[in-house]
Length: 311
Image 1: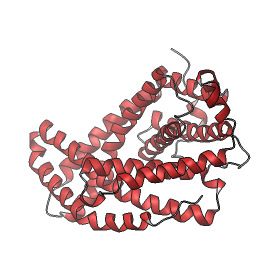
Image 2: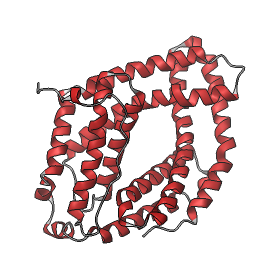
Image 3: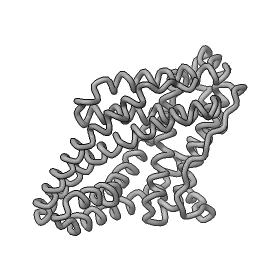
Image 4: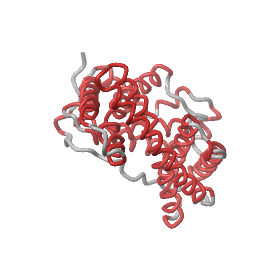
């Protein structure tokens, strides 16, 4: 067992991502290193609170940091890739954080919205059950973050980024591409992200929950990519674009929260007979709320479609 991570020196509070500051004179490799360091810093800044307390926002921000890192690796995957075994470990960590976050969202966000719609239903037994499940998952995640397995993953990623050891596994042509200015790569990446989002959102109006989820992922990746490269372009251009993406992502996120909440409530129905009736009613009300929100989603989609890339 390796020595534990130095949690004691870190604040027990949620830490959001700091802005990435890039220069147009940086190479692709230098920019990747700057952004990856930023993502890892967000993950590390929240691990103390996740490991030691039931701190919902810290878990959320740690998960955001990991999602940003995964999006970054996706952006650069034509030039460099993590070893398969390390990618497997990242997926493991993402799943552990995601399960706990899903229960947090159901208990702290989705259920209160449903309660405001359906005041006649007694929500407290279901709320207590979801809080208990969230607590259990937080304890599991705390053990994960205190584990040697997590320590080894963070250690590898930190060394991989700081020493640029990715260079050992890439081809000579990709090594040459990594030495080119970041500004051209950024422009190509943002155009690709926008095209993918436009393509997935083409039939958003009649989309299934699964299709909306794919649109949400594309919106999230487009937003992260824009935020990564935001400092390369004028604020007056990037700020409205990021805002439109954020609004679209938030609305799609709410609909995804309902879909996830429906699945978790179904689990409660099957596991606890006394909650079955109430959970079924709540699922019905949540499904109805999504139908009512489709007009707002369509409005936000139309707003985004006319936005020009800030490049």
